[in-house]
Length: 589
Image (cartoon, rainbow, N blue to C red; front, side, top):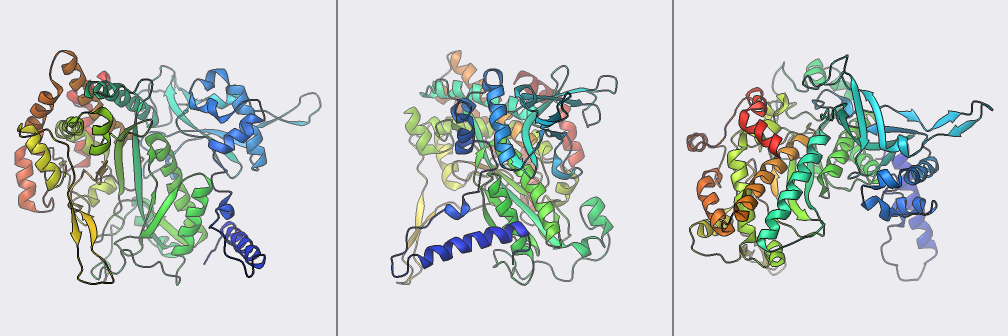
């Protein structure tokens, strides 16, 4: 069932190509699978081969986009190429696309933009001419006082400035070119969610490189980058029924009436085959199709636990790009649902007594050439140091223990407060799950019982059949009650809410870890042995590690008694942003 014209045309095109191929190869062996029917995927993002094709027409290549200085040296060239590309794709408008603060749950698309046509009239002839150059591409200006800004802007000091973000590619949708941008005041104060994230990326790179050098790996001019993968959960409900619920429309959740007579007791929705009896599958197919055309690799789709709940998950990538793409994914989800007679609910807890929706933030660190810092085998091999992974983990554990209040702050929203603490959402107690093997390894390391390489254990499952041969599984189980479990080369911040712009989440993760990397590097610069420092750090922060059931009320009290950060109220958690230690943290980083 493909309800939209675009999805139908796409399917017909692929069917026609398959039919043509079949008719021309009767009696022949089938050729290898071809991606030709999907040739339009990614054509609406100005990067890679697309950018290279158009830049070559202007005497350049996509290689210039690798160096942010192109905004100073080649902006007119890139603007001309972008204009050609836009016109060929049917676009005639551009905007600087930015992320105002406090947009989650209240602003459609969660972004700001002023759309300008890339044309003008010739004053002498009144003929239409294209009008788009490098200056227009790399910078914009708008009002800065009418957004939430914490008092940074007043009506008599309203200048707001937009600067192109070179870390996230320009893309096109409909008749409009979107230019991802940072949004700041006349004095350079951040008025958006992206600028602090970019600053945190600089901090994690600077101090990550310093720590890696002390561990034996000099990466030279490369950067340490923060990669994320975002799992987006949401509900789809009939739109006519949605309009009968003013509470859902205005508050994002049901606040009156009875609980549904049937919830998720039968466990019949999770991973069930999408039904052709309703428009949900066709709706999700069209969402995926539109995202792939924008270069968004929305790879996974499935039904979630609660009735009418679904999930998309993309391939991971650089945090700024992933966040920009996720904002567009959420907008596309809402807009495409309308075409299928559905309403998409992105709020965290629209219905009582069933699972809410999260946006699991899978966070990792790597060098630009792909050495994963949270993968024990790869980082130890790259550094030549069998304890490099243990040192890095000790810094992250210390960051979680010391700054769990900031992690709680970063996930605070009215909807998420209703979600946390049950139905697969972790409680508001910020601990980390490492699993028994990892905990055993780090325990031996901190106690000086060994500095050998961490080798995760595996086990074989034998089903006792000859049709299914014994197969290997990890030794560690999944702990879905933990807010911040280690998942092999990454940490999964499970407590993040589904409607959030996760820029603040990743700003916090980068900054608190960058602080610990800096402290380690400073101590080693002063003569401290990095392995001794890591052991001391683990001993001081060991309490934050917990591998058990976070839903157990006795355990929750035990964790609270340990002194682990617990802030049940999102309002109180947000207030921690201005705590003295946290103000000092962001100022020095």
